[in-house]
Image 1 (cartoon, rainbow, N blue to C red):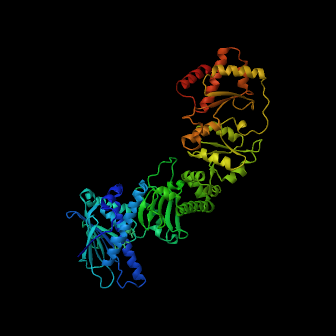
Image 2: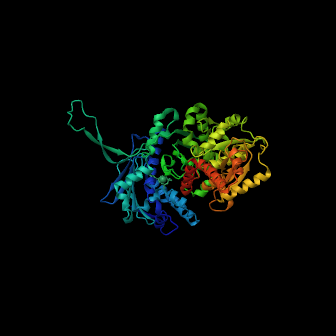
Image 3: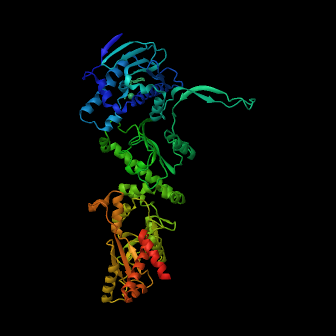
Length: 630
Ligand code: ADP
Ligand code: MG
């Protein structure tokens, strides 16, 4: 037996490891199974090139709990280690990983990122074990088994071992404060989280499998069963295969496998596959999206060579795509660094823009090849696309060709089609294209009808971020403005020629305005006299586009906070058609009481059509109406 001291500059590294990785103790299992997998894959490679003269067979990795002995065993049938290799890889090299961690820690990199994702490798075993043994035997001919043992101090022992077959067994003597890992349920949870798609089968106990009944079995006979290895992983997940080898059902089934609790089918998928200038595979899914931006429970999972790393892909996937689901696997993503470093990393930036481009290409081909289907799915995916157009200029350029603008009549236009369609009728006198839209078909019904009566198209734009997108479109395209149908009177929204001639003299207008303002005491209304068609509505309540949009944008974050105040008040214009017969009558009514009633009634009607009449005011209106029809 030989003993030795691991070359440690700090007196005792293990308590430090334990302390600083507190929140993530559970990763020890992922690290040890990764090592077992690496050792197995190395052997596979060596046998395939003829360098290892052993039978590769069907190796697996086994995880076993010994509750009484307070031990966990992780056994592989990989290349194993010779005595020299243990000295080199475990005593010297593996330690350098741990030391690197400490250095980073001392540099003040104590961000949650580094703590959470630092691959400490083999030494992470000491986060849960008071003593670790490595019983190993190399595949090399004539190798002797060795047993390495270390109790968490820098002192280790190395002696001849008893292992008969090739491979490595790691034995963790679980520490008093980590006995949770002796529970089968806890280990199952970890295996399911980190190892579900690792490339070598992982056995954890046995399970009972039901076999088909033999032909001559009687009805009451129970089906025969057998005990089989409980393999917890799928070593060949869909994303590791070629798209040509998968059909639509394979993709759907894999979605189920990833998110067993999701009952909705994904809308479509994108298979990522690139090997230059970085390595990346994966499958992203577009789930059915709601208007609730915060609703995203099941997230994209990041893997490194089929080992689960995190489901926090912030910085790696463009932010607008974090609403998608699926898997990304890349050996090239530096995992052992903090998030802020990650975001500045060149390779990571390339990955992010590759993903964004792939998603745009996929959407574009869907749009081109099956427009009808694309239109049907638009409502469920628009949030992602609109968000992407807002946050990523390159994506905007691409998406501008396939982003759809639905009308209240269920037609879908691209922006270019929309421009073509509207330019004849909806270009105003200043040569500006005015796009009318509604955000709520029911509430804005009368305004929509009025616009349609003039032959105008009305879009239905109801996403929460649409205000921001309109703003973006207005600034990136020339001579374009969006106006909600109830933002002003139509003749004002799309001003065609100079104003109509007013039937009223200036003096009459003065009087009318005074009369109106005597009745309308509510400060949120501004009276505005307009000479319009005599058969247009006498009174219309509008909500100026600018104020309303700023308010909406403020609610969804971003550009709206420019006024530096909390909630902005509601502001309405009361547009009075001075050419309408009713307004003429109001002006000619000499008795103040009667005039007041006419005005109140008219304004209430206008408010009613905008959904603003409620409570006591509505009750009064109804009472007044009955009196008037008597
Ligand atoms: P890494 O896996 O990043 O190399 P680790 O600290 O996890 O770092 O492991 C250090 C080294 O120990 C490995 O590179 C490998 O050479 C050796 N090793 C660890 N576990 C095994 C194992 N199960 N079989 C063979 N070699 C192993
Ligand atoms: Mg490792």
